Image 1 (cartoon, helix red, strand yellow):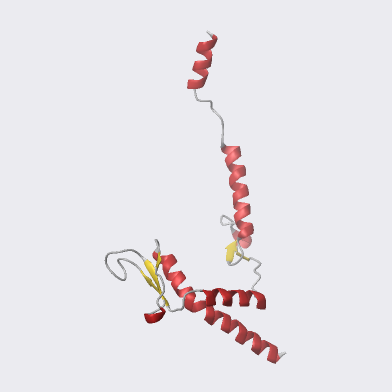
Image 2: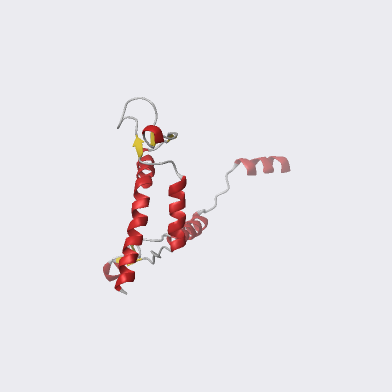
Amino acid sequence: MATEDRTQDRSTPQAHDARPFLTAYYGELRAHLERKLLLGNRKADKHARGSNAGPTRLAMNTSLSELELQGMEARVAAAQAGPWKSWVEGRDFLGGSNFIQTGQGADRGEDIEMTGATVADFMAAVRQDLPRLIAEVRRLRGLLNRAN
């Protein structure tokens, strides 16, 4: 009889409410994700109505130190010479796979195989954009220093 009871207990699913666990879990996950959000506008609560429903400006540290700029320059200098170009199968050519062409002519490096067009376009553009952004930050800092 005891053997039958144990067998019956195992085959009958135990009813339990997972709601408290899931509510706590997703509450903590949401808080974690919101703490990691470093920029942009967002509503204090997407369900909020009335005067408190407006966007909340999140704190963002936009300051780049000279050391950070030098690190960016070092990474750019260590990368294959530009320009880099994204080639996406079906958009830019037929057959083959998505890739980033690094360099041109005699400066052509190894292609970087990719699986997503958006990521490939972004990575290829960064090679050209980052040096220009570093130069612009330095130019603007120079103007500010002269004004002060």
